[in-house]
Image 1 (cartoon, rainbow, N blue to C red):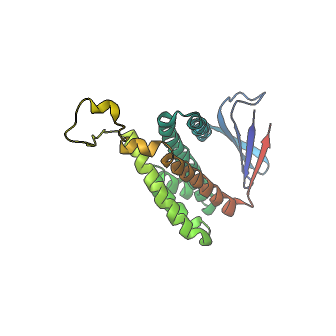
Image 2: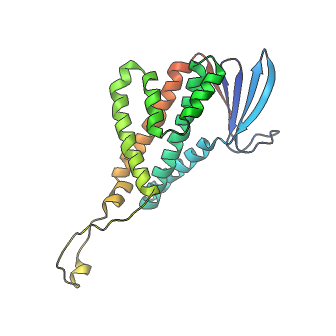
Image 3: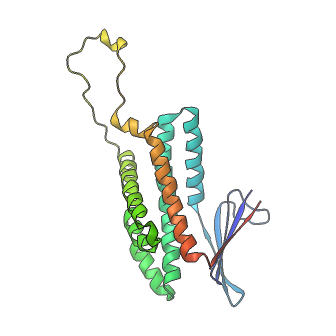
Length: 224
């Protein structure tokens, strides 16, 4: 059992847990306490599916190590992208709230952009990255675009035949080894390992945005 409490500025406190905390009725997700002058003025809850997506991604990594490569590869791409999108949404919303003192304006900007694509949200966040990391950030953006292109192929799957031979004798079927389809090669080792690294790099980059811009206002406390 793990609880993660996050204090943002002086007015918000988030508590997040995986399996529930004794004495607290919410079993999964987040709750937020909003403070003004030391008094709680609001309590809200959030599904916090980013935790679920992370667990499913990590479970797929374990499956990959046992040899369930194609099944694990699909799950890695799907849930890895879900995890990235959830983290990106959280980071963008927190960034807007921190950068804009007028709360209603921050809410308007978030509502105007929350349905934007992952890559469009990423572009909004890119100027907040460290200037020394701009080259690496652009490369990461390209890698993430390729990753989400692959995710879209899986989500809107339309199979294609790849011709590997013309005239062929039926008895030669037993004696020949045929190559995998192009999509399968992207979901199995070694190619899928590159996708895993892209996902982890993307999560790390989003975390770095928080570290750079919220280091003085965000405190995390973990309790077992």
